Amino acid sequence: MGEVTGWRTSTRTQGQGQCVEVGFAAGTVVVRDTKNRAVGISVTARHWRRFVERIARGGLDSRTLQERLQ
Image 1 (cartoon, helix red, strand yellow):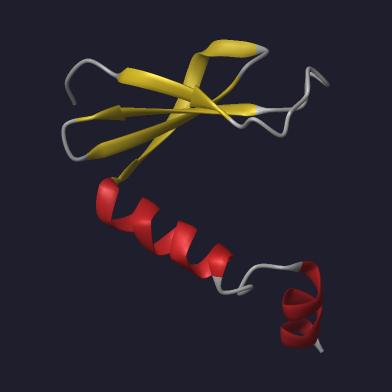
Image 2 (cartoon, rainbow, N blue to C red):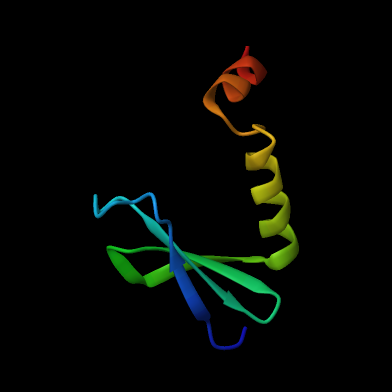
């Protein structure tokens, strides 16, 4: 993985201290907690795109997950 650049934090955090940052490297997306920037997880850009698309479709909302568990 190359240098991670372009770190972004959601505009919805409103300084509440419960947020993550997303950074980008060649073919990789890194997610880290703003309270502990030394540690993060990385996923391929392809998997990140699929994750975001699923969120946008409502595939990970709490109601959908609860229905799947029943």
